[in-house]
Length: 376
Ligand code: SF4
Image (cartoon, helix red, strand yellow):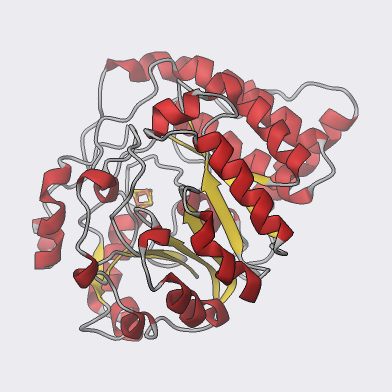
């Protein structure tokens, strides 16, 4: 199972596509190390994120608790405070670190409300590499203002020896956004096509499967259904700064319980978890968030291996690229869907957590200002 720990909602970037920074948590109320000790061992990917996790003064202690519990421990950071990661990297050189960066040009600062972000992040990752870090990279949200530069960013990252993780515009209660949507989905999707082709041309197996993840981003951008069913609350969960455990970060009605007041096993094995999983199976939000896409691609029996469908897609299209043939994207995505989807937001699944007999826990009210979580 993957677990995302939202360590804080404090953040000193001012992104246009995530408004968590407008709703900062108080340090005193943020999930503590003692509570994180209740997270079980044997997890696949644990991602410490925010807000901006490096604003937590006790980040090093959080890592000490979580590192032994996961196959991969990740820190997702805005990359503006590399100095706060140095002692962590010295102790855990295998830790995965991703700095958010939208392009290798000035657009990134405009999207993220930062100053000299590119220089700080590149210098920062280079410094961490010098210190011995082995799993470093950028993370980009592909959107109208950055799509034209996404291939350039990928090539730049590769030239530096860094990875590039990508996502698409989404809406979700945990980032207080309900109006993210591409203005020109077809143009954004065409740029993702170029990125997929570039990734498949490499000799990196990791990037071949990232190419498949990006195919899902094309579908999402064009307003189509998910490539694979979502397994939220079974294969991944989110823990927020108030220790509330949610199936995902899109729907506030998928609250499983609270880690301060309940044990991990009770939260994930009780009747509420069954109800939440039933809702996930019926979920009509066509999201392809990183956590949900990564989990969906993994084999349910052997999580370090992919499912059959992504594997077949990768083999067939890697071969095509090797033979100089084009990838028949029209077989997998429907550009006409973007035009059909331009009429406006789709209805929410269930905006009221009390609907269908779901328990309403007071912590959910903390997100009241997030508005509808239209994931269009
Ligand atoms: S598909 Fe539904 S349940 Fe799954 S992550 Fe998206 S909103 Fe959550």
